Length: 315
Image (cartoon, rainbow, N blue to C red):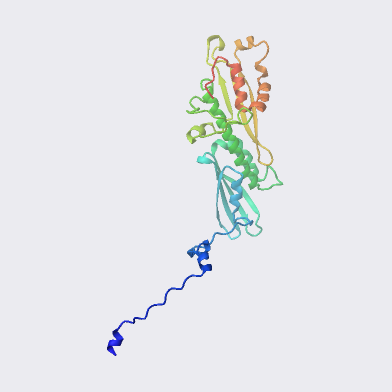
């Protein structure tokens, strides 16, 4: 009936079951707590490390052993040849070399190699060698040696920069004595720049293009004492000592330094006073000192011996 359908059932609910002893003990264990599932990431898992080499290009291998930046472009001027232009440049573009290659598509052989551009300051030392190497006349067995040419450019830059930093250090230490280097020393702390035990503790730090460019390619520094009456001949100056650092190459393109020192000019008064011929022994002394102390260390000794009255500024 309607009354029966609207009346709430008065049947009591069954009492909750009492947990068993095993359930009561399990509730104290850590794994009894529900564990929230870890959300899965939609991104793929990272690739596991592999012993296989990474994909690379030949330019990566060229940059591994050179301080230069290498770029290249290629074109197909004809149906049977390919032209490739390789540009090597040092930091701040202080040295730039462009090599033009022509490759035969039929034989995949290098048919020509020319030096399209070379920074002018590097022409006297690097230009002659690299052009002969590119033409294949320096080493006929190697042919058009593009690898040797690129290696020589990189090694020459390293030695030329080291030499320029040494000249900068000389200008900082003896600016009044260095002919043509007045004002080339710059400001700031002095740092070591060349090879040898005395100079190896401090490596070159910072340099700017404006500061280092006038010294790049310079292969000689002359130290000259100011004129002082009887120390100078009529119409001339005082004693002059030179330090010469020239760069050559062996057959592989490795740069080789040839460093020497000597007396460029000796006034009459100096010749009369030099009874032991000390000035004549400067070349041999300098050569020994270079092996022991490096170029700047040897220069320091020679300059201090010839010009003891000219104090050295802190280096």
